[in-house]
Image 1 (cartoon, helix red, strand yellow):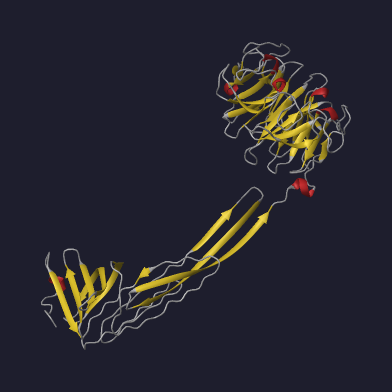
Image 2: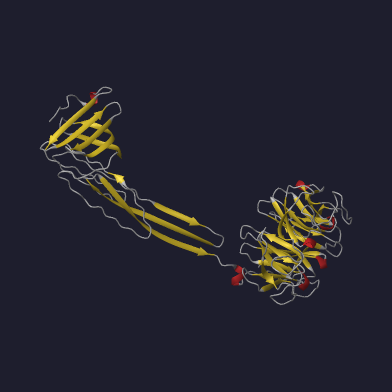
Length: 512
């Protein structure tokens, strides 16, 4: 024994160091305690190398001059062990893994103090977050290790399916006194369940009552409706194109409509007038937008005002420059309502404009613009258009003179035909005749207003076979008939509204 401890550790003053050095069979063990930062240093050494060294943030209990018990608060290893330690007992590590595993390494510290020149070590193994510690009788040796078990749950909710994945982790560890190293591995078990929602169009459950209900227009008050729109409150807006040049508004469950834009029966080009308006849209802030076809402009009515501001095109100036429009038909908006995509029909193109733009500002070419044709690199009198980026990044466009529907990524040089036979009109389930309005739903089913066939066709996602859901294919004014229909919209219950222009009315078809 070299230099016994001469005073209680609890009475050590600042900057004092207490050292106890033990020489046993040529192995020197040293314990240093520094009161200034309550730090202990413990290491074994022989003549050639230091075997183990640890820094312990700990609280010490002074028992006697030859045995010190250490209660660990935090363990941090500062050097890697080497060679061997006398009288060491090693417990091998064990691990089990499945398809997914993770490992975590922790440190185990062994301290030794001797009374009879012998050193005994003990190891502890923890499994599933339980801790076991053991100590010897003749030498105060303590070893501890702990592991952590965890579980993870992941939930995914796509449009048509949802799945839940849960995993649990069990850890096992082992320690060796000679190397003071503890390794652990974890076993993960994963369980996955999923639920898939079937597209009702594919299952045959996407149906409407084929007997329509007239909600706007009568024998005494004709409304030759073109574009129609339903806002988030199920308020109906309908554009009176060629009859009275106004926009009608009908509240949910109401019977009397009001005029919100244009002068009844008076076509014109000033800020309170419209001339052959075609389509209408109302944003979440209550601003209304109208395609004013014969005035070659887009009008914006801010928060209920009946005075329009031109935000695209130049009033009464048709042209093909990017700051001009030529008889714009229908339009669609992105989800943020930052941009609108306008069917610039005679120019055979789709042009994108900012919704806060001003008259004469250049738009951006989004599709077509290379002349009328029935190839997938051009458009042929585009009329209807819909954009639903929550399910597709493509624009869905009807070619009025091309008798087809094409989907086109904005800015791309070509598109893909998805309905009709390009350049060929017909009345069977694979043909269209001058299609006008179009909508897609969250399943990417398409609803096409087949103007020349006086019917509404539904195309299930990824199918070019049309299913007639309204109209019977012949022009007429009966409750089951349509006459040159144009616009289409759906309310929150998926009831369908059709601008039945030839019958001067808006028809509602109830969802079954």
